Image 1 (cartoon, helix red, strand yellow):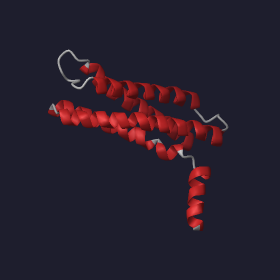
Image 2: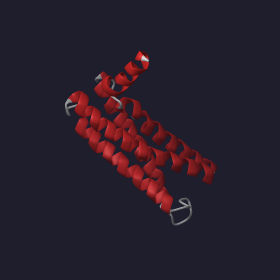
Image 3: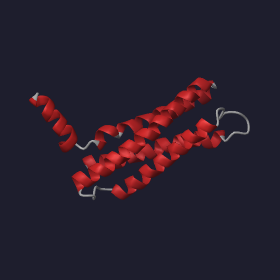
Image 4: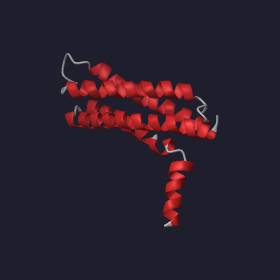
Length: 146
């Protein structure tokens, strides 16, 4: 029982929770881009739906990771973590981009049909992954330095 109490204490009060959660948006944006590229290559509606599911989950996980990051910044760095302003701006941008992508796709059941905004939709997958990658790098700077 003492081990379990120590584990819970360490997870909630010693170790920043953001570092555990932040891997979800990174992996989900990368997976979404991967499945979107496969969908384009194979001309598969099913793979495009998988990409959509991944980007929808990335939206939720970005929100959770961002809130955890704000909490950890206040708790462990007194609000002054390295690059915190850039991370807040980029994280907010990632949240907006993934949210707009998910809403667009939810409202547009056939994003690959002629006349659709297919190129913007696909480009947004690249943008979301790039934002997540830069955020991951900036997070690594906090933990490991330059």
